[in-house]
Length: 196
Image (cartoon, rainbow, N blue to C red; front, side, top):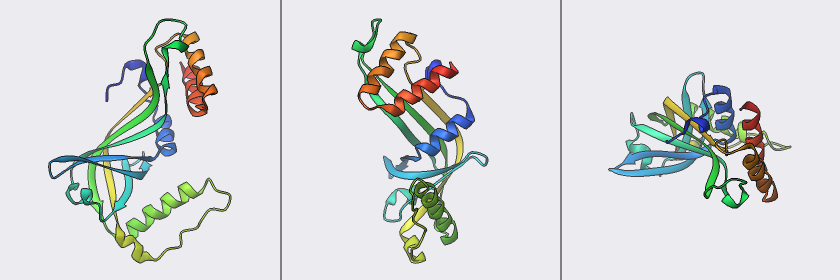
């Protein structure tokens, strides 16, 4: 991923937080000589450099993924930026946050491992509800999925949030995002300005 210096994020805690908040992404690999992609949820284990998820067993992508170097792309909030918002001349662009994770893939069908992945994903995603659903499903349903674990080899994080523009331009962009309901980007821009 192309990352100009002022958009690159290195803080591991910030990257982990972003991944956890935006954990539904695309797993990209090669299958029968073609580039294939599956949209799926992930769990990150930064301490052990692992990224874990699962896909449908009927999805053939997993069948050739073993020991393959793959890419996972996770995307956060994003929105178009009009040059009419700038005090200084500019061009149309886009503000966004994204993480690319590369790793060596392993597919697994072990029932206990699969149950742990499904139950953990459920717990994480149900935690936002007042009455979270507790895992209650027949273990035989796990036969319909395959686990995917990546031994992470690199993580690239890019937050393109107008850091290359003047303070006035950043304020203008933030104000316009507020008007169009882009609250997540407004907050992300504010955090970036505080650190800068």
